[in-house]
Length: 75
Image 1 (spheres, rainbow, N blue to C red):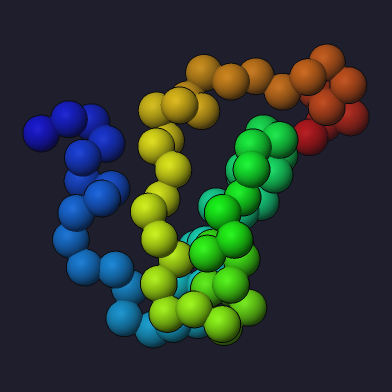
Image 2: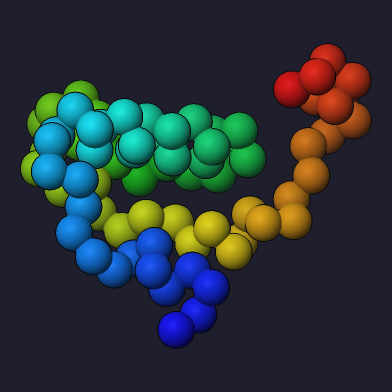
């Protein structure tokens, strides 16, 4: 088992509002890294879809740093 394999396995939270909150955090992170956000995730958060689709690989963003102006502003 890899370090992130557990993230894609197992049941997702049962309550839809918890799932939507988790996907909102994922969408915010993708937007902070200026990555494209899949429409399927946006539809899930807005209640138009039942499944958010695959989650992004967290290893891709592990060592990314904020830009100098974000660090200066404390973000």
